[in-house]
Image (cartoon, rainbow, N blue to C red; front, side, top):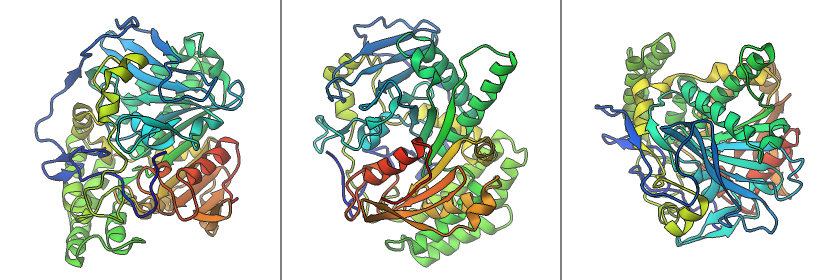
Length: 489
């Protein structure tokens, strides 16, 4: 099984090599292209299933034998066709234990534009890519041990999904995901899961996706109940967000703080930090631009804020260190690349994939960069979801720079929810896994926060001193999905 200790890294520097999810644009991590065009990603080979998109139809390959090899565990992969030119890829794994009563969760990687196969094969899925990138090993800390897990490549154009890539905001992405789920639940093979407790789990740009999707689902449920629309209500009970960018105005100061005082080593010279601090606070600087974006700013306002802040703050403060795992310098090959495995016809034909897999789709990223969605805060949606009683956990790895825990904790501290006062008065407690210290946590009502020691951006990919790979993340996941607060074991 592919797991590294706390002193080994994840990813190479930002050119979409290996695990890189956020593109390098014009030399800027998370930069904005100067020329924006919509694009279409189309299938380049056919498969044995009916490969003609038919709106409203689910096309499925069952029990391919790929990835999940636990005897008797059901899996299915394929496409939900939203339109003739819009097909969303999914890969479903039933729970290894008690699948007939286990909850259902969805997993979304971020980007924007990154495939959820990253989470499947590098983090929390039933298997993990091996060191040679030639095959997979069974994962004992998979989240489908006690949950039915549905991985979804979205928006259209991402990963194995294909079609006209026009989605450029988290809200439009939410509408497509909801439509896909309506198609998925309408299928006789999956209709039984519609009444199960449902969780949204996501990371990175999932700080936008998670709150937006969850709030949208709640609004759709209310509209179904009132008779305004027809559909299957989604029994949303849990929202989990790992190392998520949610509220840039509260999180961007964390880049300066983390660059100089993270648990491992300074990332850059103090002069670079001072320059970033000036770019943040000067009149018309990063803070002012983010604020203007969220005060009824236009798409160009928000897109400009993304370009300025990432060019002046996020990108230079990374220095020569791996932005997804700062203990080591760039480049680092961990986790091994998925490209060889997920473009091998011996695999793709079995699972019913119809397009060439990409870790991150540049066209989708460009769509989001053009709207400036990155800089639009999703904190109001997060507050709505928490106040609606959805059990929510925010978690992060303390070795991640790109969406670091200092910024995330500042965002959490700025939340205005029914639990915020209680949370502020709590002290951090030790999160132990079978007696080994793995992190720090707080609980307040149905809201929890967890900082995981030694973990990078993809928290379930890591081990720590005395804590096997993925064990801390699995304990968190199991407790939250069971309706419990976080606790040590």
